[in-house]
Length: 342
Ligand code: CP3
Image (cartoon, rainbow, N blue to C red; front, side):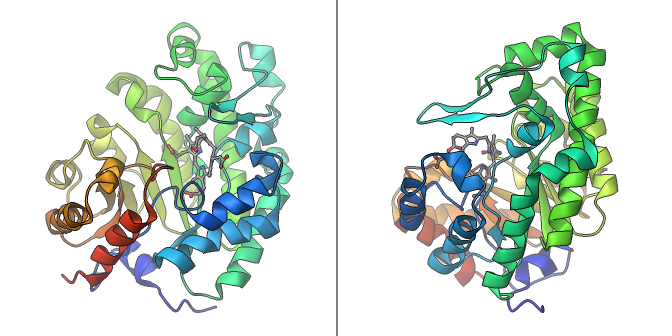
């Protein structure tokens, strides 16, 4: 079906457009009123992630309420460990937890990978198909996955962490084991993304949320080769790589076979352009905390961000929108971008 609003797709493929498209990372869920209702109607988060009809509602709500230029399918990056055989739980107010973690070669050997892992996630592909029908071509649909290092960090650590010290310990002490695990995650992720593309997603975003806790050397060894492998295998649709905190690796990231690069607020557009040149489209990067500011200041900060980036830009925050963000602040951000013209 032809898209009515193809601004996002035109921008991500490098076309010069009339204004930057806008969407927000983590726009599906977290802040909007109907999401809260949907979330309260199920016993736990995982039930929601496995309920295609509810996923359609959570995915389409930001398009209808906020008027963003793209939808992102409601799911989570942690469905991949679960599909590989390592189930997660989501504890209220405390975040994700894995009852079992990866410690040994036998643990890695026991994991499913490739199409066997991807076959576990049929409910996600069904959600994509239903969401595409519901969207009726209003905006493109983004599919996503965690980058292998970020997924490994959760599988070894067993929960969120400020340092991910256990996961990093594996990189130092058992690099071979880490590579075996990263390779299995990569093969599962490629098979999963291929299925999502067949089901109808128009763009893929890779979230490397914990890239910034690696040294440049570790990023080069343990994150980059697997990002490269995924990008090289996903050529059917445009790909965005968001490696949070990896400003030190932008030159390398710029060599990936992807169309867009997500930036957090620690990086200026000028710095990113100096590292990357002009070919890639940049996405980002307003500090999500700016949305706690006055509406007047949000408008000013958004406009100054848009001017600094110039063309080849997709407007977004520098990380996911925080759950406590006032909805009026999100409207202000989105509307400011939509009024802007180059
Ligand atoms: O962007 C979107 O709106 C699509 C949905 C989406 C979710 N998680 C839904 C979710 C996406 C893209 C993610 C990605 C994700 N999940 C990342 C990468 C992006 C980032 O923020 O760095 C990470 C690290 C996770 C892991 C995860 N899932 C955590 C740390 C948590 C708990 C805290 C929280 O709210 O993020 C989750 C649960 C989760 N995933 C929720 C939502 C809406 C909240 C659960 C609830 O409503 O009870």
